[in-house]
Amino acid sequence: MKFGEIVGHRDLVERLRQNIDAGRVSHAQLIEGECGWGTLQVALAYVQYLHCSHREGGEPCGKCPSCVQIEALAHPDVHFVFPIVNPSKTPTSDSFIAEWREIVAENDAIFDEYDWYDAINAQNAQGIIPQKEADEIIRKLSFKAFEGERKSVIIWLPERMKREAANSLLKILEEPWDGTLFLLVSEHPESLLTTITSRTQSISVGRIEPEELAEYAVRKLGASPEAAAAAARVADGSLITLKRALQGEGVTASDNFELFTRLMRLSYSNRHLELFEWAEQLATAGRESQKHFLEYALGMIRESYMLTAGVESVSHLWGAERDFCLKFAPYVANHNVEQLVAEMERALRDIGQNGNPRMVFTHFALAVSKLIALRG
Image (cartoon, rainbow, N blue to C red; front, side, top):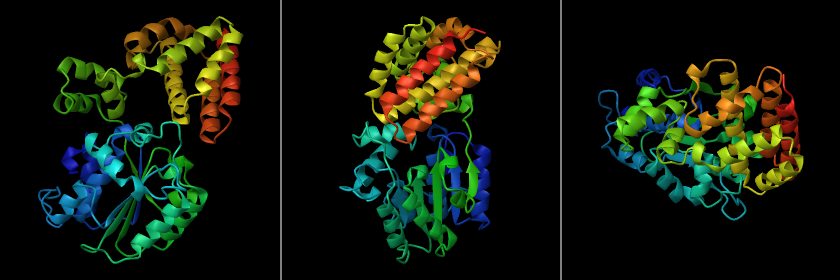
């Protein structure tokens, strides 16, 4: 991937390009931001430019052996690590490299953890980066570079590392091999060991501007200018949200919207017995689906509060979401918004730590119902 193929982030791209040209390449870099903001695109373009033997006009040439191999995700000195499932049967990322190449190529390196698990038929599982993966990294890096003098490792979602793997990585970062680059592409860097983050150079990737999203939607996704502009407005800087909105798979037509509206209607109607049924339904979903719902619900609560506060001009709601929240917004105000957010964040944390989903969502539904019924 060339720098020019990254959607948005012109200032960041120029800074990264200048650093490489000047030889200022830190051995460990932490690329922070949501997957939909293009973090993996940044990592891939950075590595290709770094390894290219014939850079031209601030871009990798795209023709040398290194460029050809990196674009195919098959360079012998560029290694990929990402969350996997069933590590006892398929112990490292290499077991899923074919699926990894396919999802990167088909989605311009724009996809999230949920998409990845779907691609490897593991929707109900939560992936990990096991200790065996760290051992494999050490083994690979112990060899001399096949081409040139550099070896690079891209670790996608390093927050999924098991504690033992994280400690092994820390040892490598403390005493790196010459010519070795680690790029950690993380959505939740706060979940990493502080001893790891303290040894990395942070690269913050922010939201993509609506104009850039709209241009991409027209150029790459075949959307009309009108549809592209509307989708870009509600995408909140994310290419993933943009794609789902244009494909009719956005939250307004998803199970998340139905789950959220049903929970809120049951809550302000004090229909507690039906809340147990609601909790049971969500408890039987996969953990990634559960987390997606909670993240979605957090967004809807925040958007509703913005309507209550009278700042609809900066809202990202449209369609059925907007229609519902215009009526629902009075139930979210100063007296309960912080507590609602806290309950959703607590449920997210509990599910992320493999808490019993029936217990988590039963408590969650009752707590939310009590807060929604509490009128200010």
